[in-house]
Amino acid sequence: MWEEVKQTWRRFKAGDPGQRFRQEFRRRHSAGRSPIQKALLIVGGLLLMAAGLLLLFIPGPGLVFLFVGGFLIAQQSVVAARVLDWSETRLRKPLAWSLRAWRRSSITLKLLFVVVAVVVLGAVGLGVFKFLDYRSVT
Image (cartoon, rainbow, N blue to C red):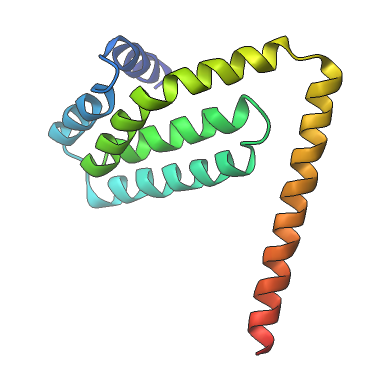
């Protein structure tokens, strides 16, 4: 199984930026999967992307979860593959800049950023919780 994952990653990495996701979709689509397998891949991709959104404020893990989740969905959806190909070409420069800035930042600044992100996420979560609780009362 790991060999297949490694081979898929190598093939994906060697693909042309802006075309990789559609190439992988065509390859997976021609292989033919059962509807249950397709549904499991899409649900798994959505769950990974949700986890990635929650972890997005911490550089590294959030982006990895978003990428892997999007990759799983793009294997089953040509629309998702097109969107990811389009966004890959447009997000490369801003992502590279943010990673360089993160690496150059001091540990104090990184810690401050993570604390602020956790506080903001907590406030948003509390706000959503209160909103949903308020909506259920009325």
